[in-house]
Length: 422
Image (tube, rainbow, N blue to C red; front, side, top):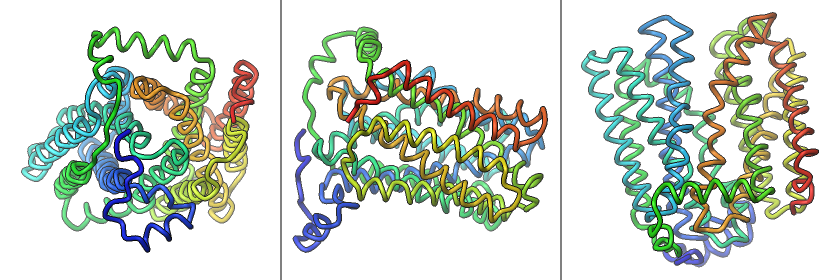
């Protein structure tokens, strides 16, 4: 894989320190450091976009329905374009493809920033921008994940995936608050100019990467649809991969939509706190995620990964059940931190196993199928909202947590192979 083991431009003293500290050991690899820095920029742009679009459409329409529909418009392209994006990852140079995708996202954000700043933006512009951004991210996500595996040796993959998730969640802690502050100080248009700059910075960050891959010519000899069919057949036949993909869909349906979607109502009606309390509550999820990922990065290649995934999923569900009983911020915060930590452990270890056992020539297609779970989030949000409307948010959290536990237990029975994955 080319220069996976390269240590160039990192001083000897720094290499020695990184080697001793297992938590950050993947940063010794030059290509991975470049990719990791790009993840910081792209996640910053992502969170700035999320908070600004939500504020903008609610300010323009006052409609909660359109607010939810806008989130769905971002997720749906993953179902349509995600598998094709995986084919692109396996047919073309991943570094160049990532650069082109970031330039597309930057130009898109810049165009929308001009519309908003001039006061020309209409509701349909928001939906068009969100949908096109979703297409870009449907390509971005599998690309970035496959490049992580391309930029480090296999034994460092678990650490690299954990650190990559940390880079994403760092922005998750501060991003919403910073985005809101920027709206108040400079208006929403400025945020999209900043987002465009972040995406352009990613293209510059990954430009010096020197990742080499094998098998490109073999993939390019076949048609796009033949490549796609090959990826689908591989997933269907490999029981371990199929089990991990099925398990990966459960949190996207029953954990994240319930936690992120219902928190505003839970904060106001159950915990009796205002917007500041809501912001702090959402930030604690990111804090829990970072703590869980730091633990994973420090532990390195833990044994019996399959059992750890099942345990983390069950503990996520138990955390939701416990959260449903909380009536004060002091009780709710520890449970939200716990859910954040368990959720990212579940996803990071799942991701690590899939990337480890998948042949490089198929990795893009497999990861794009794995990431179809993003398209389930609107369905999860609909389920969460329906349950909450029947009684209250605590009931919805209780049902969501219980269903999470039940489905993970059923998956562990159906796919017995997952319990023996080491």
